[in-house]
Image 1 (cartoon, rainbow, N blue to C red):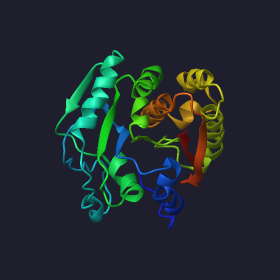
Image 2: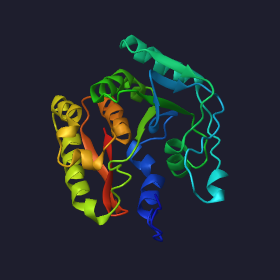
Image 3: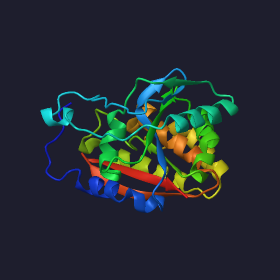
Length: 247
C-alpha cells in the first residue's frame, strides 16, 4: 500500500521510543525482543554474536536500506531463553544466521541509539496460539529479575487495508478493550481475556492476522502478577495505536 505523506506523522511515537527506558526504570544488561515479523514452527532464538540487519520492507527510500544498528547479540542469553522454554516443555531452535528484522532495529535505534546493549530476538510460533505465547512469557519471567528487558514489538492495530477514517472508531473500541484488559487487577482474568482476544470489540477488524498482537501475549505472560498499564497512545494514519507495560 502507499503510505500517506504526513509531515511529523511519527514524531510522537519517536519521542515515546526515545524515552522508553524511563518506563523500564533502569538500564538493562540485555534485551529480549519478540517481533511480529518472525514466525517459526518452534520458538526460535537468535544466537549470532554480531547479528546483521534484515531489511524486510519494500518500496521505501534508498537510505532506509542503508540503516545500521550494530548491537551485539548474546549467545549466553539465547541459551538461557532456550533452557527456560525447554524446562516449561516447549521445543526451541537456535538460529545462528538470522539477524534483526525491522521490528527490532527500527525502534531500538531510538530506544538505545548507541547500540551498546546486547539484543536477542525470539520468534513467534506457527499457529499463533495466544495461550501458548502467554505460557512462553511466563517461562521467561525470571529473566526480568536477571536484568533483561523483555519487549514485545508489534502493533495494537494491524490491518493493512484499514488505515483509513472508516476504521478510526473500530480501532478505538479495540484499543479501549486492550487497555482495560491489560490493566485488569487479577492476572488470571487478564490472561483469560487475552486468550479470547478475538471476542473483543472489532478484534478482527483491528487484527485480521494476529502476528502483531502476539508479542504482547509474551510480554503479558512475563509480566506475571504485575499490573499492566497503557503508557502511550496516539492516532496514526487514522487509527488508534498504543503501547503497554507491566511492572
